[in-house]
Structure formats: C-alpha cells, structure tokens
Length: 459
Ligand SMILES: Cc1ncc(COP(=O)(O)O)c(C=O)c1O
Image 1 (cartoon, rainbow, N blue to C red):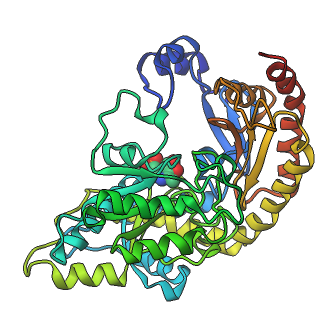
Image 2: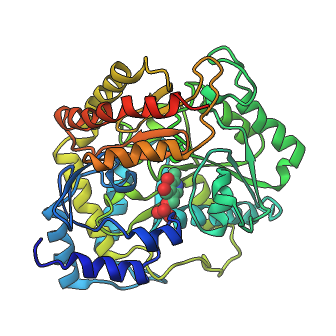
C-alpha cells in the first residue's frame, strides 16, 4: 500500500477523528493503527505489518475480509438504485428478498415473520423497544413501558440502549433513562447469589420474578436478553435458563426481546443463538453478522403475535409512526443477500461449530492450568478466558488494564484479541480454519507466560 502516506493519515486522524471507546488525550498523543486491507482472517496495516483478526472486527465480519462477491453485489445494486426510501407504500427488491430469506432461515415454528431493516444494533433494539411498547398500548395497556435487561449485558450506545446496557463502565457520567431496570445475569462463574450451577435453582431467573413483583409487572413492556452475553465477557447461560425466564415473562405479560446482534448469523455454530435453547422470542434484534460489516445493516424481527396486534389493534387510520431514513436500504440489503450466499454456499455456520469446538478445546488445553485462569468459556466462534488473581477465591485482578496489556502484547505479535473487562476474548471470522485458530493461539501462548509473570507477582 505504498500510495498511502501513513504519516499524513496519522496526522489527520489525530487532529480530527473521534474514536469510540478511546481516551481522547491518549489518542491524540499516540495516534491510531491505520488498517488498509483485509483478506480472509488477515489484515494489513498502512505501515506494512499484517495481523490476524481474532475478533472479526467487532464480532461482525463473519464471512471474513475481502469478499469481492459482496463488493460486486453492492456495486451492481448501487448502479441500479443506490437508495430510495421504504416509507409509505414504497419498496425495493433487495429488502423484500432479504426479509424472505431471513424468515426462511429462522425456526419456522416461532412465527418470526415480519422484518424492519435498520443500520445498527442499537437501532434494532430501539425499534424493538418502541414496538413492544406500542404492542401493549394497542391492547389498552400504555403503562406497560419499562424495559428490563441484565447486569453485564451490552445493548448499544444510544440513550435507551445505553441504559439497557448493564455494564457500569458505560454509565459513567451518563444520564440514564429511568424506564430501564436491571436484573441478575446467569453469570454462573460470578453468581451474585453465591450458588453453584447446576442444582442452584437458578436464583438469577428468580430475580426476574422478584423484580417484576417488586416493580409492578403492569409497568413492564419487555425483557431484553442476549443469548450469550458478549461484551460482558462471553457468558453462555445454563441450559434451563431460557425456559425459565420465558415462563416468567409469559406469566407477567412481558414480551421477550432477544438481542442476537452478536449471536445471529452463525456466530455460535448455529444460524441463530436462539436455536441452542427452548426459547420463543416475541421480538429479535439482529445486526453485525447480517452483512458481515460490509455495509451497516440491522433487523428488527417481530412475531406474528406482535405484528397482528399492531396491525389489528392500533387505532384505525393510524400509520406505524416509526421510521428511519435508511430503513430497508436497498444497497445494504444487497450486501446482506450476498453475505447470506457466502454463509450458505461455504457452510460457514457448520464451520463455526467445528472450528469453534477446536478453539475452545485448544484454549482449555493451553490455558486451563494457568494460575491466572479463572474460567474458560464459549460457544461456537465465541470464546474467552476470564483471568483472576486467585483461582480459589476467584478474586479478580484489581486492574482491568491487565487484560488490555494482554490484548496489546498480542497485537504487537500479530494477533487481535479483545479485552472484555476481566476476560480476554476471541471471536475469529467464521471462515477461519483450524490452522488459522492454531496460528492465533500460538500468539496467545507466546504472550501468556509474560502476562502470568507480570500479574501474578504483584500484590
Ligand atoms: C449484543 C449487542 N447488542 C447491540 C449492540 C449495538 O450494536 P451497534 O454498535 O451496531 O449499535 C452490540 C454492539 O456491540 C451488541 O454486542
């Protein structure tokens, strides 16, 4: 990439670009890593270095980098019709086709058959909050408007989705929306009730029940959950969790919104996270892997029950007064269609299952006995090692910068992993081979002894 003037790009970036989740002062001082190209699981930087993408960007580049099929589909759609709104009775072919294919892929018995495409996970969740509230209002219960979610969940960065997010680091100096409440997560390694699963009676689900009783279920519209908590540290739930919370939601007339922004489109080794458990969501949010990040795309999918209530019970003549300029964007949907073609024709969901099992096995083999390993967990191409100062007491290291140290050391040796609070996480593209995963883990293995030495010796 000799035509890129790295120094000039760096200078412009430092001066003018705001980077999410970055310390502004440090960013200005140190500058950014400038990425210029990607192929498969590899990325190239402007200074000529290459790195392995062990995190698929932000859990989203499911088909891997450099897929010209998507570039071509996008270019073709742009040449025909780059954009036109889908408000009122206007429509376009890619959105209709993608909605049809998505509904076909979803488990047929769940009745998830109505789709509104958007451009981000936050937007998909916001749309679902609004539709859930409208559903209750249309049935004459407008007071059912609060949204419950779980501590350690991540749901987005808008005011509502940031409030639904249950990670305190995202709430510093934030003006939270009081219509959002948090309940206990099924984070068994750090059970808030000091219980051991299985056989614990699932007090985390009990906390949902108690919160609904205490706060008055008559004021609650929906419970929002990730199938596997992602940003909170890759936390899959115990097997019976979803059946339990679903029964509680039904009993209290609270809708269940599944946030499949990370887990959708093969990430967990099945097409959708919901397929691992007995769960019947009323609304689902998708983003990320739906287009593998080639263009911004998200989807709010609602069940027949919610859709038919909105269709039949909203006041006659009242349109659905909700919409964003880029809903059902034809070019973004064309990217989504080409992305689905690749996932299907290359069997990447099955690959994620196979290679994901290998990833977890290899992590266990190499790191389970380390004195700083608390727990290794994952599902499909989602995996994490939670590090601890004391394996017996599970005492965490007081400094979350430790996992960042590991991520930075990996980057210097050619691998991107991500520090998720106390956990070091991997989420390779679904096209990664076992050999790709082995190359990734070789870097982590190289870094680990130094991490152990640095952290373990400290008081
Ligand atoms: C589970 C989950 N939901 C929602 C979001 C928000 O998506 P976006 O960043 O596209 O708004 C994210 C982003 O990481 C996520 O992980």
